[in-house]
Length: 304
Image 1: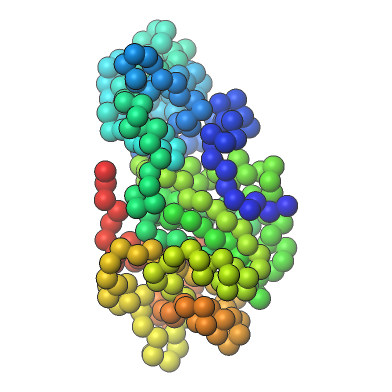
Image 2: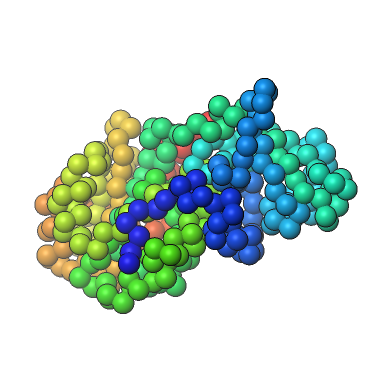
């Protein structure tokens, strides 16, 4: 069973859930922001401060203790997943100050600000339509996509997508915590809190002819290698875009879009064909390149 949508950590009840256990068992390579789930937090009255209590063995606590070497009263960058962020969360050690057995109380700041759900205007401006790649590659792509900045990831099936790819464990309902953990890894690397929403729609025709027609995308770009020199580059198209409308990038399977049927389908649904050149790229290389170019041309997200 594929995941129709990605539930929030709060909705999954993650304080003692399988996701938290998975998160704690996963080596954390880079913590550019200490992220906690809303379910891990509580509000201190009457100050209305948001705090998170983390045990001594938590990888985030180990990072604060052994990498940041933060003492009592020091501040670190932190945030609540899918909510607000703070650049001055205060470290409070519980027990032997900073010792290996010390738990951590993280004073995040004002609860009203930290628990505010970012409006759509504060989410990344770019969305991605991705034909399902090889499962192993899909797992590697998820942190990359979330670190580069995507609001919604649409996963679909093209004619040249092997049906077996959708057997990936990451698309099973019972494994959605692992899917979320991979996305959280990316936003942790980026220092953000906004986790991309994931929508799996195997029927590409129905997706582009119906669902994407009512999502309000101002610009839909079909990415495909150009061999005749007539297709504009993605950078030239994006630099000519005026306004603040949302942008959707469509990336085909590694075998390429089926020509001419799928190209005509997408163009008929309002997609404009763009290119990175004549070379055929792997999915991970294409996605990273396109997202980097898109954000550079559209302007970086404002840091609140």
